[in-house]
Image (tube, rainbow, N blue to C red; front, side):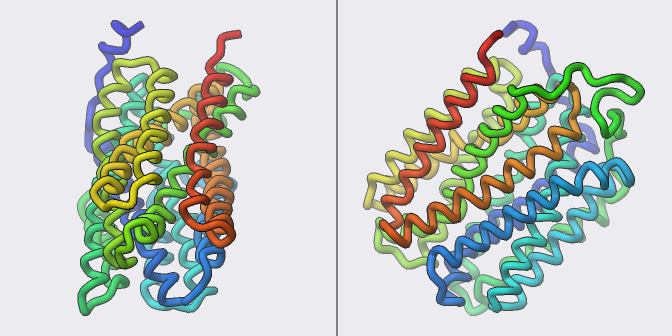
Length: 389
């Protein structure tokens, strides 16, 4: 089995690079708005629970994207869906950059998530079909590109937030990158070789959807929930634990994203060589170890180290969970691509909002115990869905 896996090659052609770079656009939105949330909360002077509503708005947007994606790809194709996603993401980001009014910032997070997820999952489905057996590696590497961009965005936002320009100016990175990408690679795309209903055009699906597909969706739910707990609340806990200002503590997310970047580039190579289930279980264990270091530490250096280690583990969660969902879909790639943002959106709603409510009631440190609970649930689902009949 390892011999066969070692022969799989990942060919990075122009369509592949376009999707990688679109993931970079998605990352400027996702990590930029995640790092901006504590600063936005300070501007609006809201509670942690109210601030967590922005995560809920992102969640609802993700679910709407999942419900809309099959119709859009069937009617217009994945390429059109991805570029509509780019345009709509920019609309949401610009709205947040322009105002502090809570209803409008919630709408901005909703629009950014809805259209960002259209772009993300249309691209992931295209990558999976375009690369076949190397699909999990391509998905991991695409997300690695995204987190490298995200690392730069979180650092830039932290620096700009401490300057005369203010943190909102850093959000303009998203439209600038989007325009540049459209001008240089707007005509590039991979052929849509798979019918929207699943399987190759004219062929019946290999297998119907079964309970393993839904368990794999639950694992994706756990992974997205814990990742967004870090994205939206790690900076808050870092500030509480170390006593640093919210502006300085925004660099905590940079450490987490740096770990994700390293993990996804390395994980892309591991996914070509190792069976997915042990690799996935190992990644969840690394996340738990990193969380423990971060959660227990009051020293900035150790907290940074814990976040980097957590990021190394989290790096592989989404690519492997998405690949497993596609694998259990019976060759219905677009069904899996549509189900993914629905599971992910539910996780984005439940995870950060629950953590925010726990933070208001018991403190941010106690609330962060939610992370290892999600890790244990994900391990249980992974082992259950991978068990041979």
